Length: 203
Image 1 (cartoon, rainbow, N blue to C red):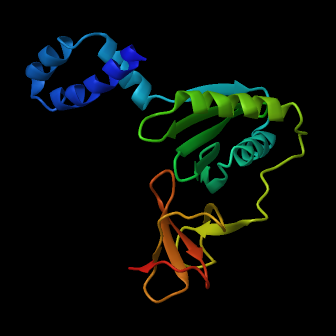
Image 2 (cartoon, rainbow, N blue to C red):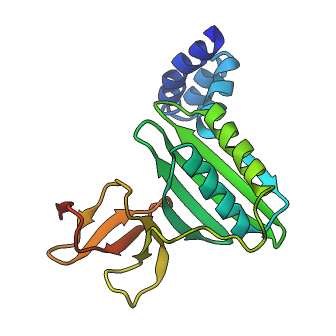
Image 3 (cartoon, rainbow, N blue to C red):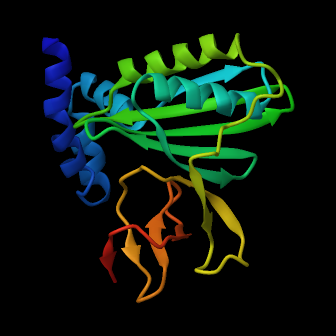
């Protein structure tokens, strides 16, 4: 515990040193105790696990695991060869990336934060997904019954970028005086959601 606290106190120091010019930065960083690099690696890395299953039943297992922990998936975004899933419960905020490596191999990367990264929560979610996969058939998919489509532009005729959970409470802005809401996806892209009944800030 004491060691962990010492790691955390070094992080601002490293970040400050990295802004020094050229050789000065290298010299300064090299003088910081080795334990510092362990702390920085933990802060910016993520938990990773691969499952010998197709990506679709894996998304179903992820959804079930998050729901059981009161961490419902708020946004699901299409990604190259997979999906990005964002979730939160007010105290924790997380991001899961699922990548289809082969038709029978899916890699999951997960990062959870409160004020700091929470690797123990990440490991708990991974363990839950692994367990749920043993009870998931190859025909199971992510349940989208409580989700709405997210579009690339404020019109239903444009590309679908993913889905938004109806009861989620994520930052959004109204697109002018229209019925379209604008939000940011896990990738940083902007997506649009058509809604007639959500009370959000106009912009």
